[in-house]
Length: 260
Image (cartoon, rainbow, N blue to C red; front, side, top):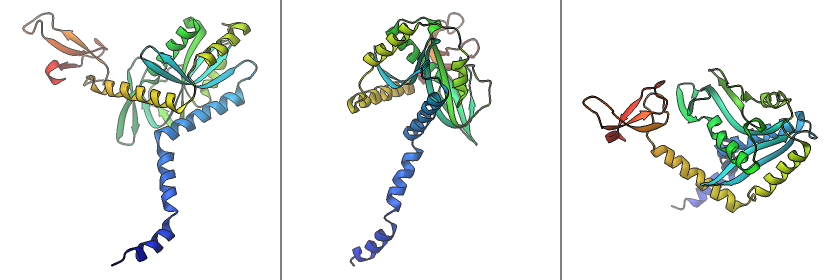
């Protein structure tokens, strides 16, 4: 039987579902959510920060000793350099500044994600090295957009939506001169990698490699934090190696080396 005669009218009637399905997959992807979050932060900066005093630089990829690092937004002003990390998430968020991983909970489903303050720390240190700034001249801020709700106290430099604008404007002591501000802008622009497909692909591969390496590392069975190789110092097991939680003595999670 020739099925083409049957399938052709069906395809003609339903062809529009194919691009709709593709669009739906794109809209739900982490990449699209990330772009939406960045657009919200960009718009807030342009609407509520004085352009003569605050200079926005976005999507900056900088070379590092082990590859590259990508910064969502940098805002340069006389009050310091603000390094902004954007998270477009929903659900309940649990975490504090010291934890390596935070938890996102949507109904009964929970998953761990890297503490964005720790993630932004590398961005801050890379910029400090490039620009020669001290800790008082550079500030880390994380902004959550979307429908996320913190169920634990938020660190002061972690905000919702436009809250990051208030955080930036709360810094009123001048840390840089106008000449230094312009020099910083020029240095970032000259030091950043070109926004080419090749550089984006290399950065994506570098991130993928880091994620894969972290997934191979042992995790604390109690807090899911980083584990450190330790050695028993006394008792019947003296000299025996084991994995101990880096947060010890706050967390006392352990793993046997054999179970790595």
